[in-house]
Image (cartoon, rainbow, N blue to C red; front, side, top):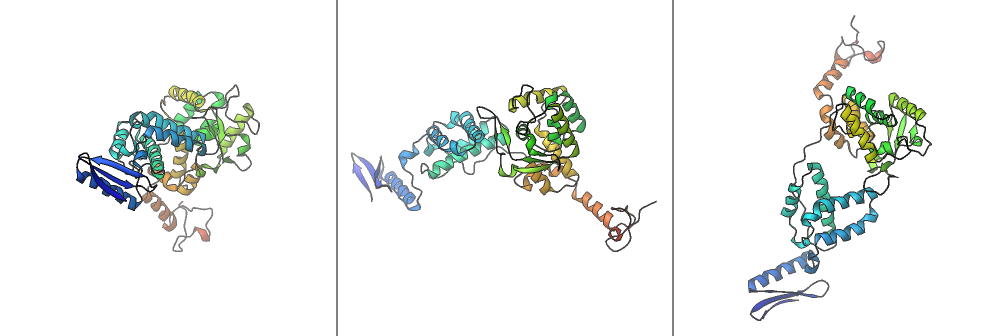
Length: 378
């Protein structure tokens, strides 16, 4: 039931919401009252009606309620990251805005003014988008104002391998208790948290494999704690090259560890959190002439070596813990052999009657594609 009445020279529009309560608003002009009433009735018919009182909730107030509700459902590190992202970058600027007053232009302006890398801006935007999506689901706003926002352009990540000479110089500069992180990074592609959470019972020395089913979580938590990998795909088994196994044996002989103790730990026995790892790593890089090199770059080196030698993208993606081979391709495709080069080599090996045999003495397998024998030269 809706109506418009004239009172004291003004026009009052009224309608009943889904809860049976009457909502009213007064206008100077009848046409404005009619437009307001028509919009409200259309929202009611579409099922997108929002109580105007709820829309007056500020972003800051709703964020507090949302974080309190969601924190128990997240991992501690995730909860801490979302809270810091909102409290540091979003709420100081948009916190006092009413939810109903937020516009896409406000969110685009926020993202444009953040003095952060485009990839980090995108993370902040994702957290805000999730918050506002929850507000839509809770009936506080009809639509998410962050939808289809235009963000600073993110350049595709193009990883570059670290030269071996530089890797060796860094290893020399690291303290003895930490040197093993170099072969674990460049030879197994492990992340920092995965290495710091590595215990001897997760290594299969007989089959030269390492099980990755947990990591050390040290950011946004009161104390470092072992937890599951960052994603489901990060739960994996990684093959270990011989030099990695030998480095692990040598390290454990010098720094013995019980099955449940971390292999990499401080001389005083403390677990190595991100700060305790970062300081000696940055110091070693500076002394080796590689200031600013990240430990994660060793992981890039691991992937680059495998892909450049023809290991399948699917296998490398699995060993890196990527959710999809597309992520691997987007990051490392520029380091893979060109298709022309690979095709030329395959065709030469299969069809050239004067090519070197690919396998041992001549046999049925050493004949060319068309049955002609493959001879060795000389």
